[in-house]
Structures are given as structure tokens and as C-alpha cells.
Image (cartoon, rainbow, N blue to C red; front, side):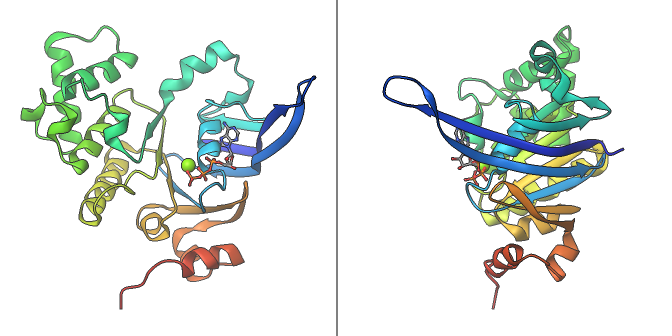
Amino acid sequence: MSFLELQDIHTHFTKKGGLIFQKDVETVKAVNGVTLSVKKGEILGLVGESGCGKSTLSRTVMQLIRPTSGKIVLDGEVLTDLRPADVRMRRLDFQMIFQDPYASLNPRMTVYSTLAEAIKQRHPDLKGEDLTAAIIKLMDTVGLDPRFIRKYPHEFSGGQRQRIAIARALAPEPKLIIADEPVSALDVSIQSQILNLLLDLRKTLDLTMIFISHDLSVVRYLADNIAVMHSGVIVEYGDSETIFNSPQDDYTRTLLAAIPHLA
Ligand SMILES: Nc1ncnc2c1ncn2[C@@H]1O[C@H](COP(=O)(O)OP(=O)(O)OP(=O)(O)O)[C@@H](O)[C@H]1O
Ligand SMILES: [Mg+2]
């Protein structure tokens, strides 16, 4: 059994409308029958063009949206069977890293407060020196100098801010990290530093991660396996090198052809 199993997931959005009676007028099939599995410690790359359903699929995995149908199993537990109250308890098991760390971090909170809040979600009783030690350890894990512990997000560079966001995601000791375009807003030189950090963390912490990107070259660098998504379905799945060297699907070939090559 895999660590994460998605079985025939459908997530449809229905718009309501009508002049007198509200009725369903339009259904967007954002995720339309996705079956995937992820092993413990694996990085799965999820790629596809804007609007193909990547974020909806990840929100469905995290149970932020309940799927219209299908089954999701994480670490032996069937998430899709959980009652709403129990779903809330499980939210800590999923943490996200977003594209824009500046927007996702609270500008009025220092690194200390941001990480303290995130650690306390899992360990509410931790305080004083123990809490500070846990924060310093996290900063160290993501390559941030602990001397910056009292600084605010605007005092950091974009890459450093993304390190804070990664530390915050790690703080509640999640089972699964979903990174949605985490390096797309960063300079190319900083991108590789953050990608290398994620690779290091996978090795040291045995992290399981779904890495979403429209950029296939980034995904190739990081992911063990790649799922190519198009119009709500996975059109191709395989290990990174196979997808790159012998893509089977026309849409995957189109994506590969769109990668700019250095002369
Ligand atoms: N809450 C919602 N209500 C209605 N439709 C939605 C909702 N969320 C997403 N959609 C639609 O579902 C489809 C998939 O959107 P989604 O955000 O999952 O795509 P994406 O692959 O993450 O795109 P991007 O690369 O731009 O982030 C789109 O047609 C979108 O308009
Ligand atoms: Mg998205």
C-alpha cells in the first residue's frame, strides 16, 4: 500500500443560477477521475497548463474541498470517510508552500512568532527556552541564520522569505507537503538554492511531497515521478527520466517542446 492513494477522484464545481428558481446551470469538472499513488519519501511532480486542475487536486487531497467522488487514503487512513470535525484535526498533516512567500507570511510577525505559532499547533504546551530552541533548530534546518529570529518578513530577501515559509510548513511535522509553484516567483539563481534545500530536506526528514509546477525543467530536477495533468485528468505518469526521454502522450510532448533551450 502506498503512503498516499488517490482513487478515481472527481472534484466538480457547480454554479447555480436561474431567474426565479436556483438551479444548477454549469458544472466545471476541475478534477475528472484521477488515480495516483505516492510512496513515503517520494517527490511527485504535478505539471500541466494553467486551469488544468492542479490546485483543485491538491486542495482535494488536503480535504480543503471534499471530492465529488473517489477515495483518498493517507498513511492507512481513509480521509474521504472522515467526518468534518475529524477532517479539521487532520489538517496539520498537510502543509503547503506557496508561490509568493511575501503574500503568505504575516508582515507583522517576526520569524520567532511565525514559527512559534506553527510549532504550537502540534505542541501547544511548548514554551520558553524549549520553544526558542525548537525555532532555532527549524531555522537551522532551512539555512536561516538564527540571529535573524526577531526580524520581520520585509527585512529578508525573496529566497530567505521562502525559507521562512518552508520552516513554517515543517513546524507542525506534516505527513505531506504540497508545494504549489514554490520557486516560480524567485530569481533563477535563487530557485536552485530553494530546490536544493527541498532535496536536502527530503533526504534528512524523509519528506513526502507533491510539487506543482508548470515548469517541466524544475520538476525534472526535483521529482522522482511526474504526473502530467490536462483538463482534469492525468494524461501521463512515469518516472522523471522516462517522461523526459520518451514521452508517450501528445500533450506531454507539447509541454516538453515549450521548454526553452539554451543555445
Ligand atoms: N472554487 C471554484 N469554483 C468554481 N470553479 C473553480 C473553483 N476553483 C477552481 N475552479 C475551476 O477549476 C479549474 C481548475 O482550476 P485550478 O485552480 O485547479 O487550476 P490550476 O491547474 O491550479 O491552474 P494554475 O496553474 O493557473 O494555478 C478552472 O477551470 C477553474 O476556473
Ligand atoms: Mg493553481
